[in-house]
Length: 159
Image (cartoon, rainbow, N blue to C red; front, side):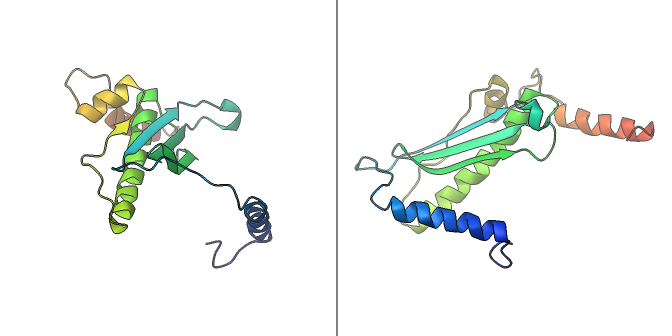
C-alpha cells in the first residue's frame, strides 16, 4: 500500500531509516560460522498486558539463525482474547506461519531446515495445545464457547 501511494509521513520515515543506515554502514549483525545452520523460533503473548492501549493482547515472535535474529515481530492481536491460553495459542499460530515462511526462504537459498519446526513457548496451555489436545484440558471449547457467547449476546440484543 505504501509503495504504491506513500504518505508524507511514510516518506519521512524512509528518509530517517536511510540516514540511519548510511551513518551506521560499518555496523551489522554477526553470528558464528558453524558447520550446520540452526534455527530457533520463539513465541509469546501478553494477555491484555498494556491496558492503557486497549484490551487486545500482543503477539511476539522471534526467529534466530545460529543465534542471530533474522525475523522479529510484535503485533497487537486482531481480537480480544478471553483467556491467556487463547492469546498464547493465537501467538503460537502466528509463529508457525512465520516459521514456515522463513523455512521456505531458507530452502530457496539452499539451506535445509530440520522438520518438524520446533517453536518454543512459555505457557502451559500453549504447550498442551501444541502437543495435541487432551480431553481434560481447560482449553476444551474455548473457541466454541466464545462463538456461543457472542451468539447469546446477539440474541439478547446486547451486541
